[in-house]
Length: 215
Ligand SMILES: Nc1ncnc2c1ncn2[C@@H]1O[C@H](COP(=O)(O)OP(=O)(O)O)[C@@H](O)[C@H]1O
Ligand SMILES: O=c1ccn([C@@H]2O[C@H](COP(=O)(O)OP(=O)(O)O)[C@@H](O)[C@H]2O)c(=O)[nH]1
Ligand SMILES: [Mg+2]
Image (cartoon, rainbow, N blue to C red; front, side, top):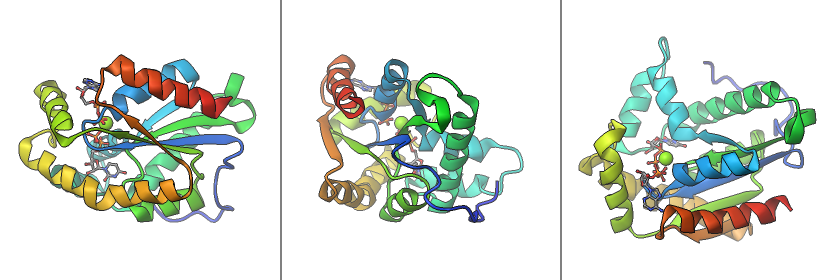
């Protein structure tokens, strides 16, 4: 994978054709869980930035494997060029592969889960790939997130679902991700959803918001 900038006109996807929803929230808030459900009901493509990074980390021949592994373990943010390129490639592939229904004529709907987590990524993605239509922020306490991560850690096999990494990820969320959330709040694109309740309760609120966006 090369991160060399291409020379096409920016942004790559027109936000009137391609609907992008960023899904943010602290580690363990339930972003992935809600995105999976929304993608099924509303014909969105769910792209988890973390999953794309983990796949790139494990890809034979990747020049970014060690960098990604270190960032994930330390709970820091991988340089934006890497993550943006992975997302852009995944979006292009999905649009090319779908030719009917909501996706005809190069249209598309994407839930971008766990991205952008830092201001530089937010500005660069909006300007060069696609401007987000909506930003969902799942909010709850660190205690709730910690319990969920501990439970997930029993089976996830993730190198960052341990006490030390979790502490660092909480700090990164406050220091790097909260400014992104404030940025979208100022732009009037932010929707905060309390995710303290059950998966079904949170889904009810989330699906209502997506329904409004698409209506
Ligand atoms: N509303 C909820 N109530 C209880 N557990 C939840 C809820 N949402 C998600 N979980 C569980 O918490 C863990 C973290 O959820 P996940 O979707 O992976 O969060 P994130 O992607 O934000 O880190 C998973 O084990 C998931 O099954
Ligand atoms: O845009 C992103 C998204 C994720 N990550 C890294 O990937 C890790 C795991 O992200 P993921 O979204 O999978 O974690 P979750 O919040 O779902 O637990 C983060 O802590 C970061 O180190 C990153 O660098 N940039
Ligand atoms: Mg996740």
